[in-house]
Amino acid sequence: MSSTIGTLFKVSTYGESHGKAVGAIVDGCPASVELSEADIQPQLTRRRPGQSDMTTPRDEADRVTILSGVENGKTLGSPIGLMVNNRDQRPGDYQEMSNVPRPSHADFTYQMKYGNRAASGGGRSSARETIGRVAAGAIAEKILAERFNTRIAAWVSAVGDIDARDMRGENLTREQIDSNIIRCPDETAAAKMIELVAATRDRKDSVGGVLTCVAENIPIGLGEPVFERMEAMLAQAMLSIPATKGFEIGSGFSGSRMFGSQHNDPFELKADGRLGTTTNHSGGVQGGISNGEPIVFRVAFKPPATIGLAQETAAFDGASSVLEAKGRHDPCVVPRAVPIVETMTALVLMDFVLRQSYRNF
Image (cartoon, rainbow, N blue to C red; front, side, top):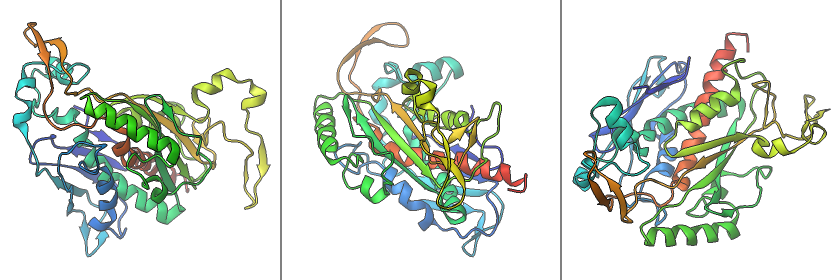
């Protein structure tokens, strides 16, 4: 089972959703970086369950502990062990689902592939696995911010059929994004999204959505053509997040409907003396390499598969069954996916920074 991402800044996650703990091992972090749990905790707190009526009521503080790789407040260059205890496990909620694979969930495919699975809560296929990613990505964010003043911000830009206005060029802060429980900085759209999610939750159903992410102050030259282009590795990272179904960068699919004369990004001399582009249809990446403009992309999330609404399906033995899933689950994952997308972006960027440093970056 593949549980590692990265070439030089390597992150391996571990743990199951209702096991004793989840976490990550970070290998390749440079030495002498100032680091404590306080640097990592804010993103975990943004990801944690039980934040509002928009999320699962599972009550977890998700407090991180650094087990290794740090001494006297500085990284040693050795592997950094990160652990978050699971304290509110309820594996009994999943007894019925041990024999009936949830529609559109990983229950069936895991069982068929491995002949075994963690039936309580989905195990490694659960979104709780992303805790390790977020903890590790928070370390990458800190290094990128300190070295390059890199800023990464993601927000909810659509829920169901409700779209927020285009805010990609507004230099949004995380404080603005977190100003409401749906994490959409367009307050008018946010109110409609909250109403939709609440109504969906009340009828025991679920709904999908879209996140937009912007990463600013990105060094020119990051990306490894031909097969490990910047956009390719970002797509891999984003589509590895549970419930993702789509990725587009820059103009994305809408760019296919434009003419070259409309889509091309002409160059100009910027106020800071560097050569840059007047528009950013490329989304900050050309030829698989960062060009210094903001990296802009969107990620689509499907409706969560586990719902309380009765569904006619079949058990593993083929017998007809009606499944009304128990347990505590998000009616819409996108508000809690915001820090996951941000930290996964940081992991990709940090790995490319280390790879570029071998070329006298």
